[in-house]
Length: 88
Image (cartoon, rainbow, N blue to C red):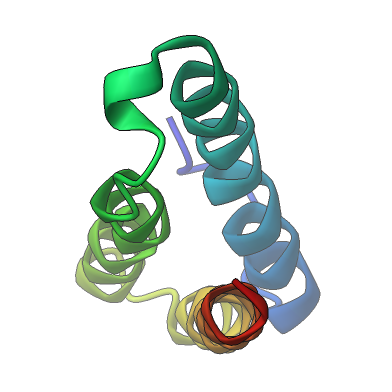
């Protein structure tokens, strides 16, 4: 699936921002529709954890620069989650 992408940090950063972003959007909607899941922050953590799977995949494919971009995006998502929890 990701074999034809270029091995650049910017590509990895884009993938690392978009993949959890879509999942967090879906989880956020579910958390607001289902009242039982309103405090289920574990859903958000799992969405960010998807980047760990992407990181492992890119390093196995010897695309280290793409993996570095995914890793940097993971740190940004973790910081955003931390800010979200502090402001609650």
